[in-house]
Image 1 (cartoon, rainbow, N blue to C red):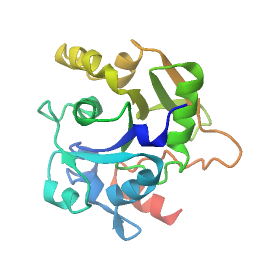
Image 2 (tube, rainbow, N blue to C red):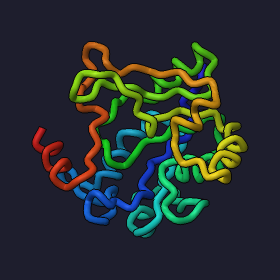
Image 3 (cartoon, rainbow, N blue to C red):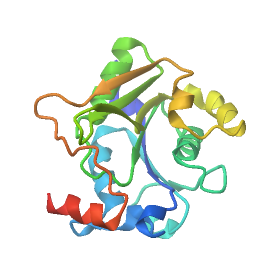
Length: 203
């Protein structure tokens, strides 16, 4: 069994926000509070430690009261840069990743990922959820990772690898479906544009 205290959470807020007009997505208001703060409040009770991965407006993120780390590889290299940054800073046995733009993710996300990883003796547990067409699809930015995968990820990213699935495919990965009765179908909806953000607020 993986203990909550042995899991560090990272909120991935390091993207360019290009589909939102270049604004910092994590700092956009959702129901009166920055999206990344919603994510923090939802994730904090599920983990032992928590940090934020951000590449700009560091002072704004630091005001949330948790450590903030910029990407260890430059040029906005995508979510894997955030995974790598957090794995380098992680002092627990496991790391869980969440994006800053899905403020309704499940309150039992980490427990379910941890149970699956433990039951299957997997190195990685990845969430999957139904999309609007009803198909179950993996949500690669919602991952629980063994911290000792750091060397593997360093090698993969230094070789130019940027796709999460291409890297996780190298390891024993279990997919965890969030399509049970009582699961919110919007839990993994991410707001990429301001219009999507407003639509999410209205639901």
